[in-house]
Length: 89
Image (tube, rainbow, N blue to C red; front, side):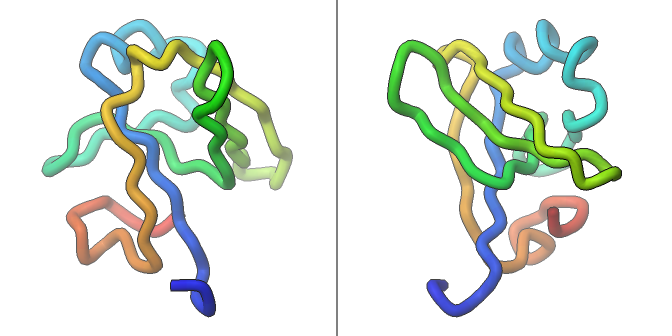
């Protein structure tokens, strides 16, 4: 996977998605297979909060920090459509 584009999706818990739906509505997506998730440019799970860098439609990067309890899993793949996500990041 080192020679291909690396896509990152952070899967959120149901509670995390419910509580973050308002402020993160630009980035929060709902997958049929995996549930709520956010596409990220990069992530850093170290520290008191889970740190994510996301990009909006205008190519502006935003830093988001959430509680670790809101994160269910992190998925990295070159093509998310094969895993059941709606589209690549």
